[in-house]
Length: 212
Image 1: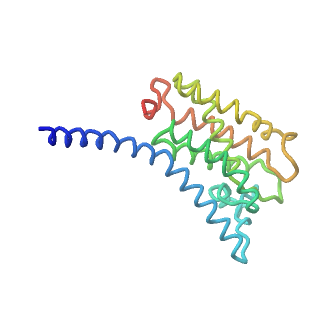
Image 2: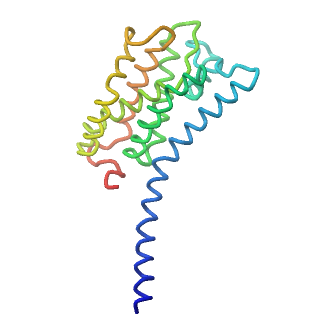
Image 3: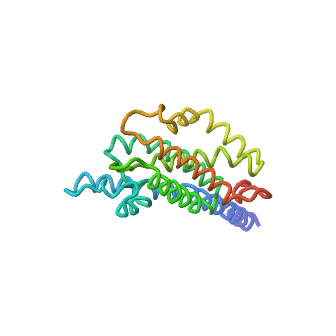
């Protein structure tokens, strides 16, 4: 009897642990996958004679349209990529946690909408690259999500994000960035994140992952 009970208890523990493991993978895998692509492309750009950075967004040029989906994964050197890695990892993980299965929809909306705005409004004769637009999009998404869901978890996340990363918002203004940094990409990314929150979130129900 004791052996049978022990096996039954072990089975219950295993069944409980499996969903938790699946939830963890759902949160971390998509963010780490995107980050891995960024690092792989930067290493390739360093090793190859070709300049992958030229595949970024070139405003109002037909050839520059390919940069809309590619620009977030291209960086002007490892220093640029390192600067984006930690906020991307933290904010992206929070978005994946709160958005659940809608993470990819949120990311795509930010990349496409924010990138298209840069292509349309950005200065000529420039190439815009970097994940910072996506980072600002995640920031915008998280700050608005609590208002839409009215979930105390989302509200606490928004407050924490604002406290830690609120200073980043200065980077979405012309006077808040150094020369060579696109404040427009930050602004359009942030706006795209707000749009993504409205488009992908039901105001009647909290995100599916809020119970986890």
